[in-house]
Image 1 (tube, rainbow, N blue to C red):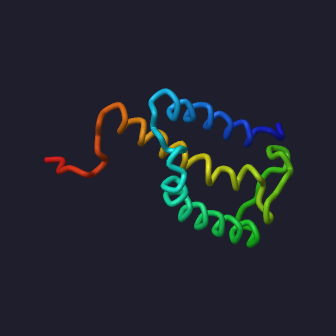
Image 2 (cartoon, rainbow, N blue to C red):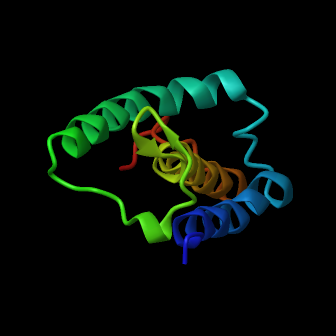
Length: 109
């Protein structure tokens, strides 16, 4: 049970990671762009999560996490803020790659 959260993150990586290779979404090879895309949300939600857990608004079930923590948050929670946005970017870029969609560069009408 202590690998539940890590297992979910691994599943997201496996389900989204193939998009980089097979559909050539090119998210990870453009690492500076990737970093600029996820950094604002990462920092915002990390600070929010730290404040909320320290205030006692929520906590993490010790039996469902590995036990390693970074700054008071479970490692899996910190990785969540990287893995999930990356999966979203991989999905968006895969759709763009397959359809030729320019993602807002053209008038939809």
